Image (cartoon, rainbow, N blue to C red; front, side, top):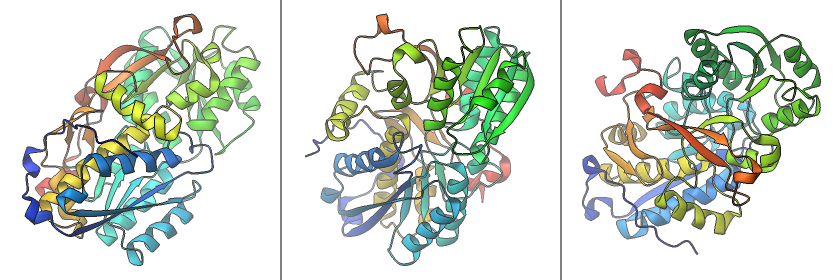
Length: 399
């Protein structure tokens, strides 16, 4: 049984009477990877997070009849697109949550706009979601590749890692992450000495790592995520790459990945996240409840599903209906949000949710007090500095 959290979320612009919200049916679809390389960072944990949000929002008492369904998109855009259409056309889904894998997320964003739903994306990283392919019904909540680059890329270059070689997952997310990080590296006085596209997903990184090893790079940037990043780091250790002096930059890494590797292997890695379970009393309290249900500490993606769902439900209550996705998304952009997990959040006109990002370093085993005590916070990056500025043509509050 999920206990109710006393949530300190202030949505002054979303005030609505309980009478307005009476009898509102809301159907949420959690669409993500439930069986592949991204299952640990999203998967069933994102469903747990969405359920916690519904209960903590006290939806039933506020007249919202919320149903949650879920499906596995298998990291394939065609499968994700077919599920999204089925959900909107036949199953009465009003909003789709999570959607890691940028190629899938971009396809689902198009369908969501066409069907006037809402996409609250927590799992995908491509900046195209709020730039080249921006839509009025897309809310990009947790992170993007620009924020990761402005954290890990800048810090490692400024620390002396001037020459970079990228191992890039060969799809939209990987290319976006490489592009954003390369721009930050060059702006910080570094250079890119090579890059190689790696099939997604991949098991064997040996030939790619050998290219990187022979490039003379100071830093090998891993523009991938989930199980792919874990496998690349393990194999780099087996080849003695880091022992020989080259550094690895895990450009998107999660607490579940560090836990899987172990502090002995992952120690010293720098990474950028939007959330860590042990940051403060509120994150610890929520994460304790999450772990009691799911058996693992939450990732930033799962925390983002929770927070994005809370803000969405508040907007639905204010609008008085979940049927007009564009109206609900517009209402979310009016809100002043104080979120228990992400702090101050503002959803811009392009759908980009801005908030602080954090640079962490993985602790050495002797500094860790438990199996999930894995991060030391190095720096805070403001939302203004972390995320790219809004394109005028994507400011849907002006249209």
